[in-house]
Amino acid sequence: MSLLTVGTVAFDAIETPFGKIDKITGGSGNYICQSAGHFTNDMQLVSVIGDDFDQDELAYLKSIGTNIEGVQIKNGEKSFFWSGKYHMDLNRRDTLVTDLNVLASFDPILPEKYKNAEFLILGNIDPTLQAKVISQMNTRPKLIAMDTMNFWMEIALEPLKTVLKMVDLLIVNEEEARQLTNEYSLVKAANKIREMGPKFLIIKKGEHGALLFHGNRVFFAPALPLEDVFDPTGAGDTFAGGFMGYLAKTKDLSFENMKRGVIYGSAMASFCVEKFGPQRLKEISREEIEERVQVFIDLVDFDIILQ
Amino acid sequence: MSLLTVGTVAFDAIETPFGKIDKITGGSGNYICQSAGHFTNDMQLVSVIGDDFDQDELAYLKSIGTNIEGVQIKNGEKSFFWSGKYHMDLNRRDTLVTDLNVLASFDPILPEKYKNAEFLILGNIDPTLQAKVISQMNTRPKLIAMDTMNFWMEIALEPLKTVLKMVDLLIVNEEEARQLTNEYSLVKAANKIREMGPKFLIIKKGEHGALLFHGNRVFFAPALPLEDVFDPTGAGDTFAGGFMGYLAKTKDLSFENMKRGVIYGSAMASFCVEKFGPQRLKEISREEIEERVQVFIDLVDFDIILQ
Image 1 (cartoon, each protein chain N blue to C red):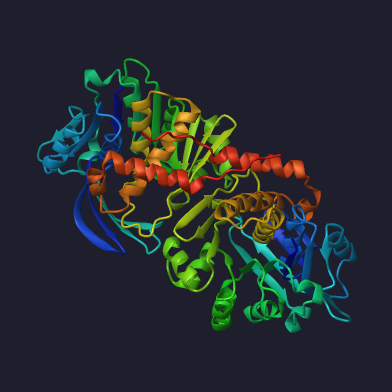
Image 2 (image 1 turned 30 degrees about the vertical axis):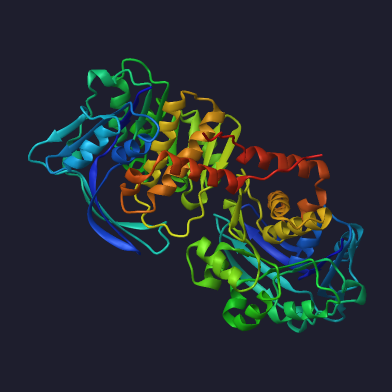
């Protein structure tokens, strides 16, 4: 089934304690598709780029099954550019540059053939645009997922609340869940968020794993204890892409299957951080992914027979 | 099989965002025994108190199967007293008062009948004293576990390194593992710590769970996502007590069984934080513990069939 992604396609400059790269492709839409592409080749992407963008990256996205008719190319303009520097602990980073460029006037328009996609994921962009995308669909997708960030909670809380009512799944990190609800306890935060709209919630905890909430059920997925995290950029979007790609492939929206999706998403994220940008996602094979999932299975496996 | 615990028995004053208590019993040895007592009634405790200590608490320890001949009572002196205040996020606390009192001159002496204990856990005390306890044993215990803290790494690193060579298992938190090894990556830290002596290592991550390392194997145990954490005091010692108590009960030191021990320890810790001090540990039944373990099982349960 088709997976429609709306998100950025961009250039990044990244500095980590282990190295520095002045220009590499990035963007939430790009990471999501490159990750989901390991599970499905029926993808559609809505984004905006300048005429400076890397043609090889676009060709790569097409080669893995992404329809890019919805990627607007603005002649004479520059692609979105982000530059960041990570601290020693890699959980914290300073944004050095955010040049919105083409993103400043982004108006997502869905090509006709995108309007019946069964799975929709809205990367972290202005919630008003996220809502505008949903309103263009001809048929309501089976699953609408969205990401957001603190920035929108501060400057666009009302539009954010509006779009939250329209989606099935919110994917945020711990800090964002706490800021959105003003609750420190993640259990309380999860309850409040689901009162705002989404029936499903994933809270990403970085190196500490992820939590999936639905009804009165909770699933805790570990993160792989890694010897080295080289570059965390895009790990969250890679997680989301793996999760959505797995669901689109398996066409099963039960809680049990979503748990599997969380594990596959976590496995994809664990690859992403091994090299700069989306490089590693281009290299990995199906066998490597299955091997990595086996590591996750072993990591949390225990057997207790209760009396 | 007998479980010998060496640790403090003390008074605490605790302030959390949810309440305040001026005087409640505490101490690592106390928490460990109250937790382990749910699994074994063959316990021995080495500690020191003043003549001000709560007789009911000592009677309680005896009632759950703790031999307290090794608890020295110093007439005319006061028990160890600690006072702390937790921040809103409960992961951070400020120590307000540390009155060593009887602890300043603590010289652990093992009663003859303690010297053949099969399981030994050394709570967080001066590493020189921890080594002194081990050297008094007639037969080498099947498992020697120890806790420590940053303080000893700063003022007694050499004695700490000496005792690390004598034990099988170190139980520390993330920060301590990092400080001891000067490695941020927990995988690298775990490797370095095991080169220092202990074949087994547990790294506690508080609300993010715990990791058990042995050889090239890792086990990741979740922490229960709790709606309210009332008071985290003693949670780490309660974890250790549950873990050791479970091993002493099951007499099985395989990695598989240690994983079960980590789950039981985590379940015990999840009760501990529900009320001030060790109060909750006195109330819970065997059924409640089994129910809680079932929640842990459900929390991480998923099934993926790899192709």
